[in-house]
Length: 208
Image 1 (cartoon, rainbow, N blue to C red):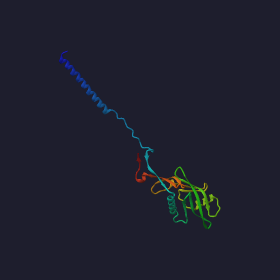
Image 2 (cartoon, one colour):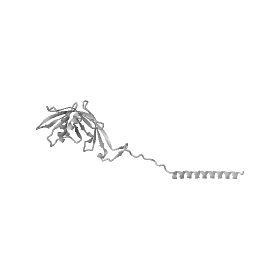
Image 3 (spheres, rainbow, N blue to C red):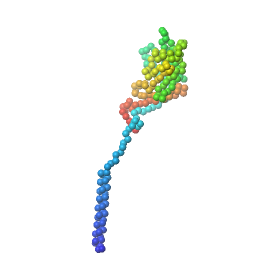
Image 4 (tube, helix red, strand yellow):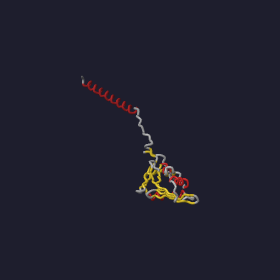
């Protein structure tokens, strides 16, 4: 084969190879441009990962709680003729006076605090006395329920000889939710869970 014809065939082969490469490149670019894009699923916030509030555990002493409780009682009894107080020592003691006939008689109730799973407290009666009167315990509890003003979240239950303190139903101005975690008077270990809703801070919702 003449040299000029062989050289011509080489250039021809190179031309078709280059053309094929260009066509392949164009096809790849077109495929990348027009290929359907797969959708990426974004996880929606659920009740488990959406945070409505923050919770803190506050530990204190029975002396502090005693002062707070009696300050609340004093406010509750304003403009009334009733008087009673609570003392936190080895147990919870409620001391006051109940009207009997034309006079008043001192009453003393010793109660054992039992924390409930929901954060409330049941005060179970250990002993009770109404002056020198020999009355059944349930009868004295009925007098307590009838004559001593209590917050609406405190329920005197004469039939079970106990007082139910629904701490979780307390209405607090700051919109805080309070639950009792521990109430051990013997070791002076009192702890409360305080939940602060984000709405109180002007935050509607927060996600992590």
